[in-house]
Length: 141
Image (tube, rainbow, N blue to C red; front, side, top):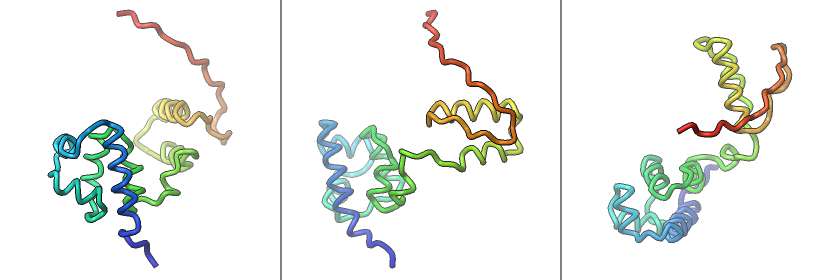
C-alpha cells in the first residue's frame, strides 16, 4: 500500500510556513520571489495543494533551504534516501566506472568527494595513496 499524499501535505505546509516566517518573508513576498501566485502558496501552506517538484525547487531556492528536505516532506523522496549522515556508496563506484574519465580526473573527483563526506575511500585493488595535508592559501588580491 502506498502512502497517501494528504498525510504529508500538512507537514509540508507547516514546514514551509515556519521557514517563510523564519526568513521574515510575507506570503506575498515569498510567492513573488518563487514565481508563484499568492493563493497557490497559501493553499500549499494550508495543505490543500500538492506542489510539483519544480515548484518545491523554486520555493527552496527562494527560502535558501534544501530542496531535498521539501521533497521528503512532500513524499516525493523517501526520507531514508535523503539521509545526509551516511555517504552514498555508489558515488565512488560511478566515478570508477565512468569510461569518459581519465585516471587523473577520477583521483581529483574522488578527492573532492572525500573532502565533502570526510571519509577516505576504502582500500581497493588500486594503489593506496597518502592524502595531502590541507593548507590554507591566503588571498593574494
